[in-house]
Amino acid sequence: MFTKISIVSIPVKDQDAAKSFYVNVLSCRVVEDMPMLPGSRWLRLEFPNVETRLVLANWFQQMPPGSVQGIVLITDDIVKTCAELNQRGLETSPIKQQPYGHESTFNDPDGNGWVLQQPVMANSTD
Image (cartoon, rainbow, N blue to C red):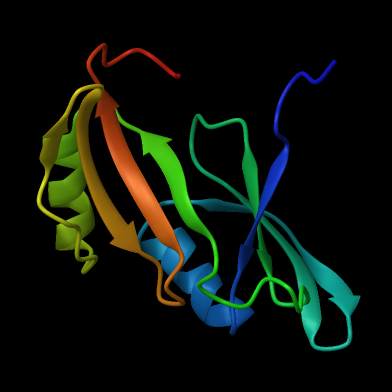
């Protein structure tokens, strides 16, 4: 029935500040940045080699900034990825061993929570 998740909306307070974080710290690329509603833009981003796109949204009243938690990003080398993110000024949690692999967490400037995960099989996308 469904074939993929195309876009995940990330609720943010300031779209420009969020854009700077996602581009400069998380290495996202801006796909679209255009006016949408008064005080809002359609700001769609993508991670390199990741099919699902992000929209930095400030128009959902039921999704206040920081309300999204637990989006999982898969990496082949969590130690290297955490080190790179730390060098860019992002604080990541200590890497923990879990039954399914290794993981670390971090928050964007609005408090949205992300999970960085290296599955037991590093090439797994599940």
